[in-house]
Amino acid sequence: MDENIKKLAELTAKSSHIVFFGGAGVSTESGIPDFRSVDGLYHQKYDYPPETILSHSFFLKKTGEFYDFYRDKMIYLDALPNTTHKKLAEWESEGKLEGIVTQNIDGLHQQAGNKKVFELHGSIHRNYCTKCHKFFSVDEILHSEGIPHCECGGIIKPDVVLYEEGLDDTVIDGAVRALKNADLLIVGGTSLSVYPAAGMLQYFKGGTLALINKSPTPYDAEADILIQKGLGEVFEQL
Image 1 (cartoon, rainbow, N blue to C red):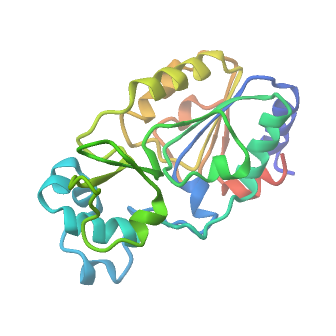
Image 2 (cartoon, rainbow, N blue to C red; image 1 turned 45 degrees about the vertical axis):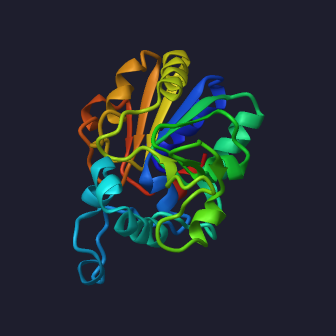
């Protein structure tokens, strides 16, 4: 076993206040592509970059084009929890996990069994009418055509945080409390380049920061344990 993975395994065995902070790399191992990864067919199909399409102003001005992209690139209902999701659920059931702070919107942590999940960017599983606030499931969105409307006539919007929108205060408060209470923070599958989410690491004042990511991040120098490998490879050894 890699020396750093062995060290992390020893720490997770002793810890009772683990917080996991995760990004797209958690879900890619379940077959959900990072929407920033532009494939060869992308430019043939979309006239705008993902960050533009997934903005609040684009949703308001070009709602139909937003939903074309959203249904095609953001909803993966066949995806299943992977090794990382399952291990985190196991830690929560053992009383070792303080919480999960995630940038993902796929709901796979909850599907694996986790309850203490702070979804910084919302969830595809929650959708609301912008007029009367009636709830709609992700299945209703996926199987609708064009712009989905409520019976009241209002446009339905996914409960995901788009570019130009702020994070939910209640979610932030919960995530900050978890980070402040953590004795071990494991950051995995994120480039730590998306703000304000990445800035939340400042609230961790505990013992050990472990960083697991295939590519370098701006926080590498601050990590007590740095592992540049895939999450699945690491978590199956913990």
